[in-house]
Image 1 (spheres, rainbow, N blue to C red):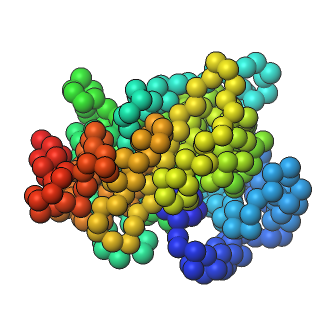
Image 2 (cartoon, rainbow, N blue to C red):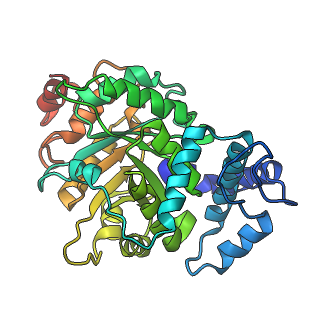
Length: 379
């Protein structure tokens, strides 16, 4: 899962695959599928056994890469344990609502509030700020401030939405952190700026996670195309819509992007792809049906330095035509530096600057762009 939001370097992949495989082996009982306990009146259908899951994965029309199979199995094990522990009645009620909706053939009207919020006029960019409690291999800091402290910073410095990496293994967060951010944002009702929508950034493999996100107050969820395939993407979009949630589909290739659009996605995020040109190549040839709008997001990968190249990449993605950028680890590289704190990074990414005339690396106050960088971002 770390590869979908904050990708590891290529040389780390074998280690990551081995670790996930070992984790899956230890956490999933291969002899039996999950069944709710006797005292659990959950409407949840039994998840498949490992062998059944493997058969499903390798016979689907959309082939998943080997790493996708491993992370999917690991996440299914997490979901299985959550179900065995007994989800709250509020989650089960929402799950039942999803199932009731899926039994009907009626078309579900897709919500568009987040899509509209992220899509501004040409030449501008919106920002999704992702909250996580820990950074893997950042080389700079390892701990992040509590969500109630950073949530208002995201809002006050101009983010359009807040995402919470709701996966304890990869980001140190749980759905409780989503609740905390939602509650903090709600405190801004009636203020300017007002509350930001919160996105559950989890690896969705089962509809109960969508119910869990809705119960936590999230307005959207992320679904990774390369892990679940086109058919599941289509189903999860419908499931989420039945609860009033939007879906951001993570894609890594042009084929996945087109598959996501074909499945009904209205928001797609290019993840795991480095460089603005390579990101744009994923969406450049999209065929979008007449009458439909698709919001495109570029996921900005953190660099192994403090040069703030991520800001320049955000500007280039804006100039290439992306509607929004998703920024995560890059927000925290400098900790609480008075100049390069998370809010300053967000504000700078939104600035109407160009790499032709400005550079966020001009920190000394000398050179083009330094005045805007050191002045405007702190206003």
